[in-house]
Image (cartoon, rainbow, N blue to C red; front, top):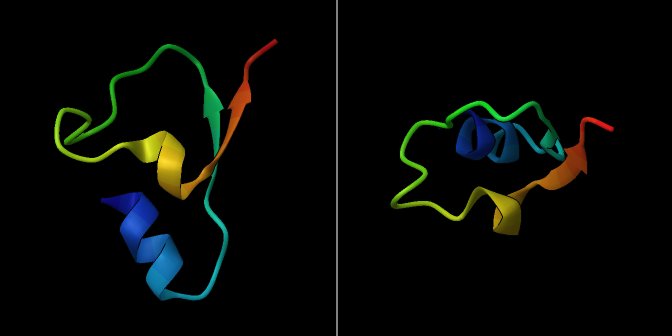
Length: 40
C-alpha cells in the first residue's frame, strides 16, 4: 500500500523493479499508479 500512501502525501511514487513481489499485486495494478523503472 506504499503507492497509495505516497499518492495521498502528494508525491509521485517511483518503483525500481528488482523482481520483488509487491503487496496486493493481484488486486492493485502498481504500474498504473507509479513510475516504473527497470533495474537495468
